[in-house]
Picture 1: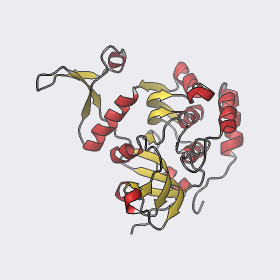
Picture 2 (picture 1 turned 90 degrees about the vertical axis):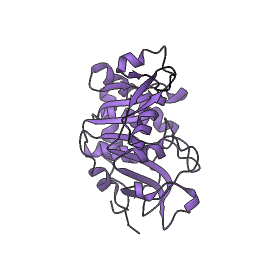
Picture 3 (picture 1 turned 45 degrees about the vertical axis):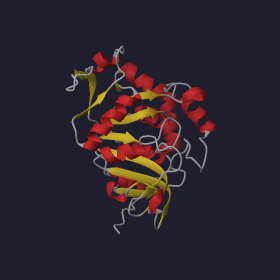
Length: 271
C-alpha cells in the first residue's frame, strides 16, 4: 500500500500559480471548501477554475484574487442566496475571464481529456450564441448525419475533490450524487482528495474514485463547509448569508477573508 496521506498545506502547496484546477461538487453541495480556503491562505494566483456549476468556492477564489479565469456553466448560490457577487465583479472589471460554457460542454471537455482525444462532439447547442462567442468549431458527421459542435478537451492540472471517506492509498467513497467528481479525477493530471475521514480501507464495492488516480489524501472533517456534505451535514445558511453580504463590496470581501480565513490556521493531518 502506498501511503498518500499528507497535510492540507502540503497538498495545496504542490499546485503552481497559473494551474487549471477542477473543483468537485456542485453549487452548495460537497465543494472542497477547506482546500479552497488553503488556496487563499497560500496566495495562489492565476488559476483557471473548472466546474459545471460553482458557488462559494469559485466566488471566494475570485474575491481573493486567486482566479484569473473560470470555465463553468453556472456560478451562483441557488435560490436562497442569489448570484455570486465577487465572481460577477471580477468579470465586470476584467480581473476574471468568464470562459462561458453550458454544463454539458464542461462535461464534454472533461470526457475528451479522460479518453485522450482532442475534442468531444456535442449536440444541442444550435440556436445558442455560445458557439460563436467561444469559437467552438462545428464538424461534419462522417456517417452523413448533421454536423455537431466540437468541444476542446479540458485537461485540468489538478482536480480537488471532497468525499465522505477515503483510505491512505486514495481510494475514495462518495455518498449521494457524485456530480462530475469521478470524471474530473479521470481527466486531471493530478488529484487531491480531502475526506471527512481517512480509514484503513474503503469497502471495494463502495469506491467511486480508485486510488491509482489520486496523488494526495487529506483528512479534513467538515471539509465541504459552509457547503453541504451528503449524509454528514447540511449547508451553513448563516455562514453563506454572511459571505454573500460581505462579498457585495471589495472591502467587505477583504474583511471577511482576513477575519475568517487568513486568521485561521490550516487544517489536516500533521498541520
